[in-house]
Length: 118
Image (tube, rainbow, N blue to C red):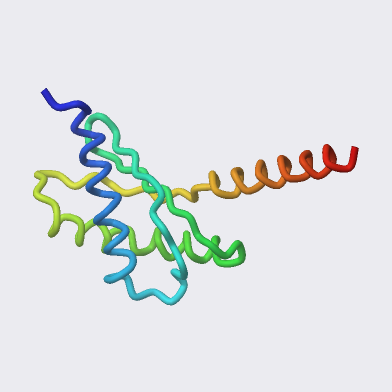
């Protein structure tokens, strides 16, 4: 028996393929440096939530808008690369975990500096 569910295997495959499609096939100048951080696929394989991280804060809104407009193109490209009867609908979400981690790191650094002053 396989160690994890089909939806997890599909999510891992989609993460790699969607990242490649965004980097090499989507020709939209509004999409700057985008990285696919995670993909969650529902158990019934009908919806795939794609979490992306956009490096520059000022490009996030336009980048997300461009990704959502390219959603059908990305889905059709994915259909040509993955052998599945049905390709899930794609939903792009901004991944803020890197911002959160950076905020925590800053707070820990500040605490260390305060401890060093004592």
